[in-house]
Length: 125
Image (cartoon, rainbow, N blue to C red; front, side):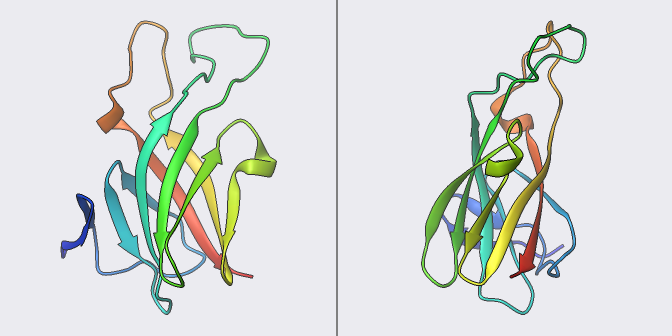
């Protein structure tokens, strides 16, 4: 794996990932998308209120994944686990979608912010 610094503490975890293929990033990791000028960085998770796997909840809850996308301008976005209509964003000619956020919470095990891994995809519109 080749690591390339892109600023703000992020590192590109591999040279690139192809369009339409899922990729997983840890907090403050970033990856270039092949054939584009885009670099996607996973910056943080806020408000993780997902129902713990060992609990029974009336609602499934939500976690908010923050990403920064450069290439064609720099923008920051929030992607939600609990609302499919807010699980993807459009950046220029591309759609970036949150597929999964791990680890899944358990009631007796708090998640450290650096333990999160977001699986995303980037596709051309």
